[in-house]
Amino acid sequence: MDSTLKGSACLADLVKFANSVKQKQRNKKHNQQWENTMDMHTLTRELQLSNDSKIVMLVADGLGGLPMTPGGKTELESAKIPNLSALATLGVQGASIPVKPGIAPGSGPGHLGLFGYDPLHYQIGRGALEATGIGFELQEGDVAIRCNFCTLDANGNISDRRAGRISSEESAPLAISLRQVKIPGIEIFVEPVKEHRFVVVFRGPGLGGNVADTDPQKTGVPPLAPKANDKASERTAEVAKEFLVQAKKILASHPKANFHTMRGFANKPALPSYQEVYGLKAAAIAVYPMYKGLARLVGMDVVGQAQTLAEQIDTLEQLWSKYDFFFIHFKYTDSTGEDGNFAEKVKRIEELDSIMPRIAKLKPTVTIVTGDHSTPSFLQSHSWHPVPTLLVSDCCRPDPHTTFNESTCITGGLGHFEAQYLMTLAMANAGRLGKYGA
Image: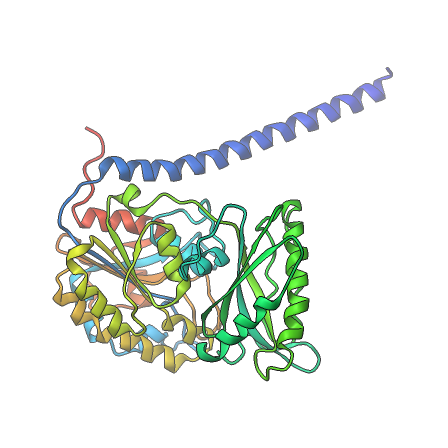
C-alpha cells in the first residue's frame, strides 16, 4: 500500500475512533443524568418519615407573566392580592424553572417537574394525560391523542384554533359523531372531554406514539398533516390521516367546529407513584381532565366533582383528614393568558387570592403557591420565564418580601431553582425527610 493510501486509512481510523469516544461520552452523560434522577427518588424513598403533616400545593396554571408595555406591571403585579401578600410575609419565595433555562414547557412537563419527576426523563404525551384524566383505561400499545375542534375558513385555513371555545354541551355530540369513523384493523375510541377538547384512542398492532401534532399553533394557515417522527410510528400517522379525512366530511356542516387538530400522540407511560417515592397519600382536586390524568399517572387519588375554585376548596375541606398531600389545580390563569386577555388574567389571580383564607384556616403544615409555567398575556402562549413560587411553613426561612410577584421572586430566598426540587423542599418543611448520611 502506498503512503497516500496508508495516510487515508489512518485518518479514517482516527475519525472512527474519535466518533466512538464522543458517542461513549454522550452515553455516559445521558446515563449519569438518568442515574441522578433515579438517585433523587432513591434518596426520598430512603429518607421518608411519617407524621401527620399536611402539604397543600396550589398550582395556578400559567401564573407567570410580563408587562404589556416596557416598564409596566405584570398581571400578578397588577392584581390586588392582600391574602397572598400576607402569606408572603410569613414565607419564602423564588422563581422555579419548569424544565431548563430557556425551555418553554407544555403543561405535562411543567406539572411533572412540580411533582418531583424530571420532565426530561419522564415524558408523557398530552393524549395519554387527557385519556387517563377522563378515566379511560389505556392498554399497552394504545395511542391516545388529545384533539381540539377548530374552525376552517373557505380556503381551508384555521380561523380559530379552539372553535370559539365551543361549550361542552355543543361539542360532546360532535365528538360522539366521530365514532362513525372506521379504519380496517384499528379499533377507535372517541370520547368527549371538555369544551373544544376530545380524545381519540387508536388500538391495533404496530402503533407507535411518536407522531407530530397537526396544530400549526397559529391561524391563517391550514392544519398540518400527521407526520411520523420514527419508523415505529408510521402506521399511526397513516391511521391519523385517514381519521382526519373521514372526520372532515362528518364535521363539514358545523358553523364553528368544522374540523379538528390532533395533538400529543402518546402511548401509555409508566411512573413510580407518590406513595412509593414520597410516602404520601396524595389527592388531586382538579377540574380539567388532563390534570386529573397526570395526577392519576403519578398515583394520586382524583377526588371530588368540583367545577369551580370555591367547590375545589369545599372538597379540600371535606377530605382534609384523609390525605397527606393535596394538589389543587386552577386553570384560568393560563387560558386568559393564552387569549392575550391581561385584564381577565388579573381578575383570575384576584379570584385565586380570595380563597386563600379558607386554605389558611385549615392550618396546613406547608402551603405552596406556584404555576407549572408562565403564560404571559403579552405573548399569548406558554413561555420560558421562571415561575413565581411561594412556600410557607413554620420552619421556612422567611425573606424580607411582603408581597408576591415576579419582581419579588427574583430576589426571594429560594432563588432560581429547578421545579423538580420543589417536592423535596415541601417534604423537608413538613418534617418528612430524615437526615442523609451519618
